[in-house]
Length: 261
Ligand code: BV8
Ligand code: ZN
Image 1 (tube, helix red, strand yellow):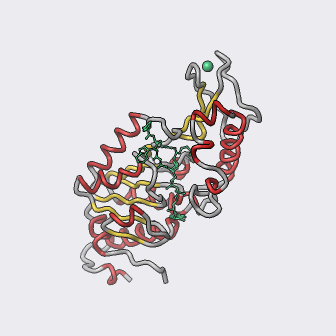
Image 2: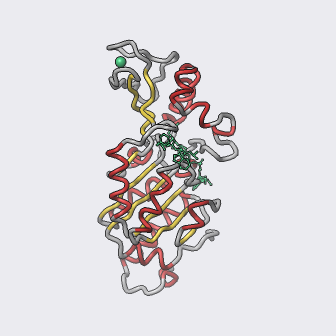
């Protein structure tokens, strides 16, 4: 028996929804084996964000920062999307418009099959020259020991991710704000909600009239302001949500979800 309940309000709003935005963080990929940032075993526990995920850190010690991304790229290359990612894909068959807005750079939503994914903080599988901007493909799983140099100008090559103090990609941010502003329901999943401007997505959705439900095994800033808080793991809660929605779709005259069982 699951330790969380799926509130009727959320099920009914999802069942009636035309548009849903799913806002995700590192917790979404935790069950795939990708370490989170602020979890106990999290990678930040050994390094401070400003030490590694900043342009200053990269220019100060490019080898250290490159090795860190190579380490993370190697982990991501060995893992698979989990049941939570797959449930988000399944939502697309139940709700006309589903947009994923993710802080994750691990590409797992796309690998799971989500069709609309807005990557606010970039993607670890892409790289570019800091001097001339030329993209450098270092295919998944392929690593480069030293910091690769740009083939055209010899400049340093960096991962195509957003570092602290850097602006988010305009096109992805604008698309994320549009999706949030047009959503009937915003599901925030596996995020501590401390990094901005990404963490403002649920508030943007709520302001536009969406119901906000936060899914996390630990309460946090987002669960405090959410309409609904579901204390559970993404890989358990999201498949359950899909199952209940499918039941509601199959037998719409069910008045209360409990009747479903
Ligand atoms: C910017 C890519 C304009 C790189 C990342 C306003 C107020 C305060 C500070 C600021 C502000 N505005 C801007 C700032 C500064 C800064 C910021 O927000 N600092 C924070 C630390 C206070 N923001 C920026 O610098 C942004 N740029 O603002 O530009 C500008 C320019 C100049 C000067 C000023 C402004 C850029 C930020 C982007 C940084 N890049 N990632 C990389 O990955 O290497 S951020 C990175 O950390 C992630 O992408 C993510 O965003 C964040 C980590 O958070 P989460 O993903 O939520 O992960 P976390 O581990 O924290 O939490 C996991 C959660 O999952 C937990 O709650 C846990 O309980 C839960 N969980 C665990 N297991 C499960 C689970 N949940 C469900 N299921 C499970 N199984
Ligand atoms: Zn170059």
